[in-house]
Length: 472
Image: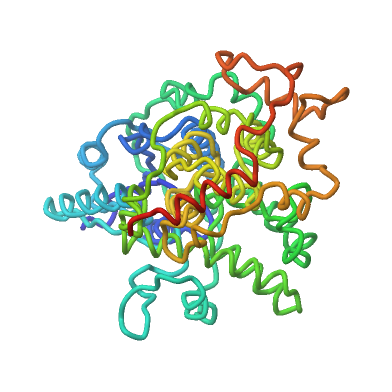
């Protein structure tokens, strides 16, 4: 290993300069550092909104690196091929990256590490996306946790190292390798006119994520227990967008919440529990990769879900089911790229139970529309709602979207913000929905609001009948 040979740091879902173990290891060596982002097949395979949001995040990271005298090298193609080319061009003998845990990334990273080591390159993966490595959290019998509550009890008292500080400088190589232009990648092309609508709701980059965390801890977290279920309230952290791309680390969030909890905030402990729920999702996708694509409870493969696009599915996607809670949530998704967590449970339950539609259809729609899309959280959330996943809500528990609205949006503030039809003076955000959707939908705020395609009571009966008739 040459004393002055460069180190390549391969960025992925870790778009930050603070609490970045791989970057810290490279910086601490005193050797030149070549940061790189690779647009490979996994990037190209992302849905419209996640790919667009990733492009924004990569661009912002490039600016942050330039501000400390470094640079982000952009290359597109097969990851291993690109890394080998950069090693040849720069003389680097070390490649560092933050670990990923979803099945496709794990396969790619194993192949890359094996090939680089075989070629005599020091290839290292580092912790960065999680607080607890999935293989370090075990039951008393030595297996992995399949239920969240005992998982939480196992990790809540664990020591989480203090976050690493901000990188303020990196040694540059004598010559920078050539880089592609981000704008040539067209990562936002599939968003079309929706990009201009969603962009004002994006909180881009590490500084914005830290500001968001500070505001949450200082002003919101104490009431998190109650207000997090109210979709019209500013009662959540909204950090899922930044966590999904690693613009902030989970342990930065954990320690901020712990400090507040030690000051007596009950809501802060609840927030820490939600961070652990995220960890649980990755714990499961690591140990049981099938959760990303197939029923985690394999017997549910025999359940007679609809698996095709039909008029009911189209109405659900368009926010035109006639069920106000569902429609408001689906429109929030189209305008902001995100959806309140309580609303996610309602729309998922309505699709999988009231409409008897396979959770994969919902998972794929979210995968296309969410700027905070996360492979583990999305998969576990949908299977939890459908009843086919680990620690899932029982199939016979069918959320009533009407009574849920009465409970969590009594004044209909959420509904009023997102549904324009039938209102003389619609909220500006309700009107933005019509600016974001495909023109081919041919929808207007002047349309009549639809009657329910499936009422709450009829849908519940249909779901329970199907559940009773199942043959497993």
